[in-house]
Image (cartoon, rainbow over all chains, first blue to last red):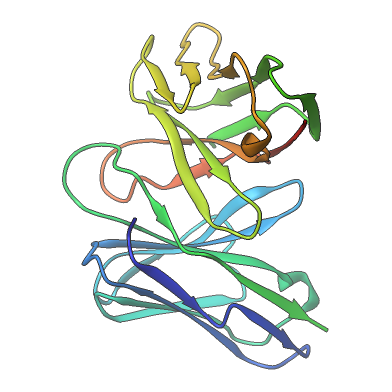
Length: 114
Length: 113
């Protein structure tokens, strides 16, 4: 399995506060992704990265920003948390090369915004 | 845009029963199709995949066949076990590069002994 860790694993915060979630990988994978998981919606892509300092928006990017200053770290920031951002957040990575390679997922971060 | 639709859950079966979880998709091109599984408290793991029409993906007794004519990728298993209890996600990805995944809503499966 790809070595993917997420921190924190659980967080409770208040509306209006900034929150940063961290994804760390040890596999030197080029691509990294942030998804959110909500009942009835499956997983939806928030942002992704295709290299250091190279990022792009996904399906549900409003209210989120990302940064990738090193290959191994991909940060997701909620600029001003809202209750609608209560969710479980998953990071994923994928190596480059070849077609249709597997995405490896981290264990998730459960975020509650009060 | 691309989308994936799975059968509504939850699904509850007895051990050794036959399992089918339906999945259909809408895509503009020729996507690759995946089934991911999520065990309680964990992230997602790839269960199986198929990259072109008529391909059959298989793993751990699960199978799914890429049917272009019906735009479907139904998951099947002949005899389920309690350890198969999990949430199952159908997904697709298109093209080269980032190969972003589009997921269905997930189907929770519970197997009773």
